[in-house]
Image (cartoon, rainbow, N blue to C red):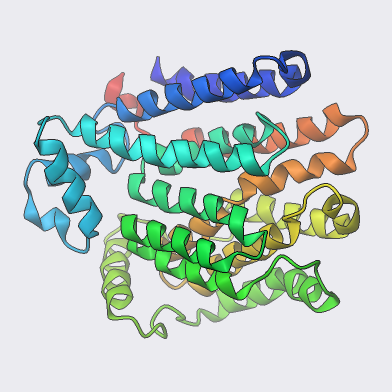
Length: 350
């Protein structure tokens, strides 16, 4: 039955997208009920169904080797859960409650749509982060939360969000780069930079310049070496330009840049979304020498696509056509996540 659960989620989201206008009196309650249901669903996943849960259980049961490179917050939560439970699902519940609740709160504050962002979220990031990479889930949630103060020029509050993200996942330290950006309307220079990311990135990809080794942070170097060894042993695939997520994101970036002036009238934080999306794409190419790091950093910045992709709707009349394109993007991502790349092991629970 689990194989049908995720398509059912996105089907629910799509149904609600088109019923949103008719459900105005109860949208708030439906939205937060979905949030609670997702928390329970994520927390109750079978051990071994996703690639990370076995490692989490080993750590929870006291294997010290699996705590290497782990954040102090992770150790603290494990010790805290042991005060009242010996079941790792209690740990899953805490992570899911924090990560999913923050995401839903940020989406509710930043998007005029209740359900359209969820069609993208269910297609990829709910599975990738909230069902597999729990700590990364909270980091990406804090990134979404930071958009609220950053779009208003409150960088100190944005930095506080990034500190929270780093507390739960060390890789989130890279989010501080965003503090160099503002939400001012895109200048010609910025539009040129964003338009050039793909051609420049493809060149960087084929040149195989190792930007990871240039980063002067010992912890990142150790992580990169560990990940590269896993890639060499076949645990992870090499970086590939065949990823549909990268090209879908690139297509959305170019399309929204083309209609930038029209969309910016209805999306006050659009400049910031586009700059972070550009960072997501650039990270994929610049760190491609270590595929895991390229993917993880690109995905971390890429969480903003939950808010960016629905902006396509502002360029379509009738509205249902734009919504259909956004929902189609969510379905395509779901198909690749579940049935082509097989991030979840349905045979394990069959």
